Every structure is written in structure tokens, then in C-alpha cells.
Length: 120
Image (cartoon, rainbow, N blue to C red; front, side):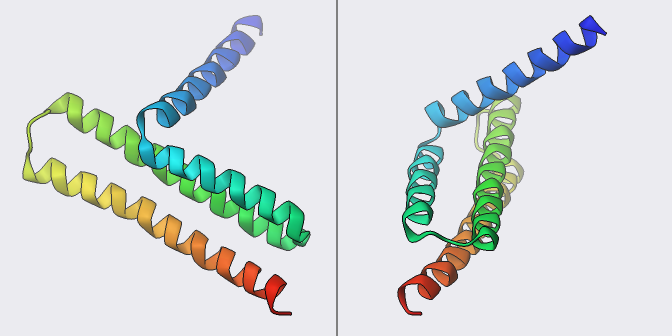
């Protein structure tokens, strides 16, 4: 049982190391961090509802997950072959598209929530 718990704690440590790597190496992740802070602060001051908080938190999680998976794919692709290869380039583009889709959806959700608070 102790070995199991130690392994789980170690795996959580690896995940936090990944978050640090993500933020320190990716300018877009740094932008996401600023946007996340802004949205959380804005939500607090606008006193958004519980349902709106759920939508905001899901969107934040969606964008961060997409960014982390995109970054992981880029790291692996660069290790496999640092030279430009069309297939690897397409894979990177599709992964980046996933981040863009998540961000656009999140912006749309934020716009709906903000619209209701500013114009109701």
C-alpha cells in the first residue's frame, strides 16, 4: 500500500513538473495563464452565477488541456525528427487547431456570460 501511495504522489509530482514546463516553455501557455487570471478575477467581481462558473471552469480546463496535449505532441515530434517533415508539420498544425478551437469556444462562452452581465 505504501509503494502504491508513493507512486501516486510521484506521478502527481511529474504532472506539476509538466505544468511548470508548459508555462516556462510556451508563450501561448503564458498568455493562457494571464487570460485565466483575468477571467477568474472578472468572474469574481461580476458575481457570476454558479452555472456560469461551471462553464468558465470547463472552458479554462478545455483550453489548458488542449495546450498541454499540443505541447506534448510538439515535443515528441521534435524529438523524433527536428527537421521539417510535411507529415509532422500537419500533425502539429492539427494539434494547434485543437487549441484554437478550444480558445474560440471559450471566448464565445465568455462573451455570452459577459453580455448577460453588462446588458441585462
